[in-house]
Length: 250
Image (cartoon, rainbow, N blue to C red; front, side):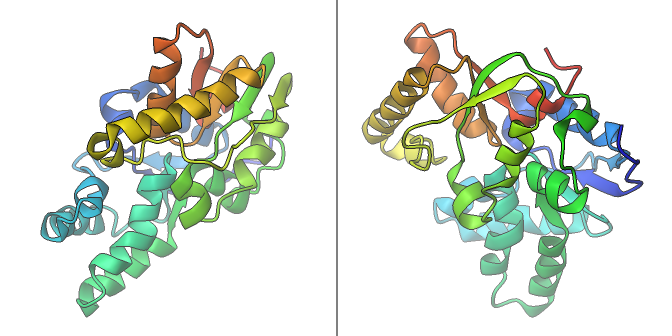
């Protein structure tokens, strides 16, 4: 076990994890606590506003963003188990409030202390070896880098650094890894046939990799790809990175 961190952080759990995959939130908390982080959870947090912002409803997005600014104004760190929601808090809020100086300053303050989960572990807690989390995994896994995590936040090496250090885990290479899985939030609703074609290509590559488990840092992507795999009768499991690192996760 590594030296305890003694850092305080608040968890921004995201809508999809809260409503559909609460076990992922539990794993995030388990891992952070094991590393000595004191976790807070503002109970009145809501959607970050990304879906409405992406759809062009800026007024509605500002309402949700103002709530997040208020909820996390006293946080030392904000940890987000999603690249897309972390990008919203850290980048898109600056766009939303670009012409509102007071709120823009609040958005900059929030952005400076917001980290995606894997980024927080590697860049803030300085985790070099996933075994300090108690992580073990027997089998082959493949990693999908989500678009916002990779392109907006520039988080590329941190998730794989953690995966590569999990005892017993064999990481397979994913052909076309950097190509979008086709979810894209409201994109999959507006353009379902294009989305279906994209996820079809993605899961074909996942299946060809020989991996038993598909890992990502965004449950929205995993939900999309997991649904496509399930419809094809595949036994490949989907797991958030936090679940791989959490020794108590099944």
